[in-house]
Image (tube, rainbow, N blue to C red; front, side):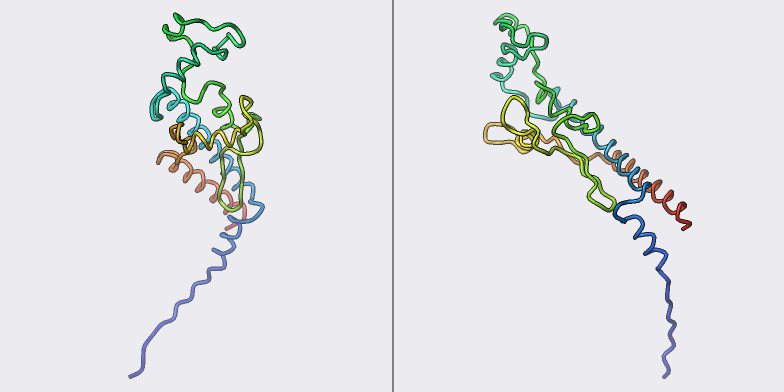
Length: 194
């Protein structure tokens, strides 16, 4: 019996050229624009979550001793370096008790475009962006870097509860990023005549 067969070959060279364009180093401008949009989306999401959680929704609340120290200490809004407001004021609820917001440094570092210290945005190659805390910038209150302080609070310690800061984006953010990627790839293909 003679076998009957058919051989089908598909020329994938166009797809390979397309893949090479998308993952080129340095990336094409269409990809860079998409990655910058992803970073902006993630930073906005991370700051919204940080703000929400700092108000007591999602992170373990501050210990009473921490609240009392903030209400009596020198870092009260508008009272830096001045005498304590006293017991009556502390009991009345004066002073900042937002979680991880006593100086605002960790929150501000989530937006490196504002030239704040301790945050970063990197493009490691391919279709990826990394946003987070890094570098040697000091927190100011201690000798720890902002990145070290963020890591301590993110993971927790024996005495400090974990308060995750860099978290996975929501499905809505991921969907928006996918739309950004589709738009960038379409622009790239058009610009190359593919």
